[in-house]
Length: 107
Image (cartoon, rainbow, N blue to C red; front, side, top):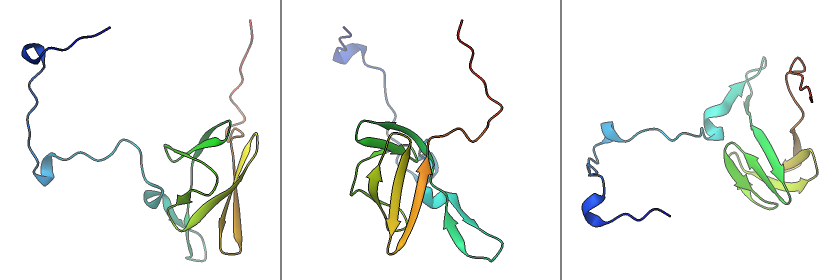
């Protein structure tokens, strides 16, 4: 429904200096690296949603066999979980609420 003509387009400044480039809105899972009490580093993935055969992990839609940061591969999806595998290690991400104090009321 919107038609943009050349004369009506807003003027866009083309500044490509490093200071003008903004950080992405979605954090990469590399930004989510945490060290546990033993000092070993662990990537903290954030599963937001699962729709059909796709899952939103760290702000990006992923499917089975997709590679994630840290050499993890999406190997399985269910209604509420996504299983990641790296070598012989498996991690299960869940969409279950991490804050049980939130309650929804139907009227």
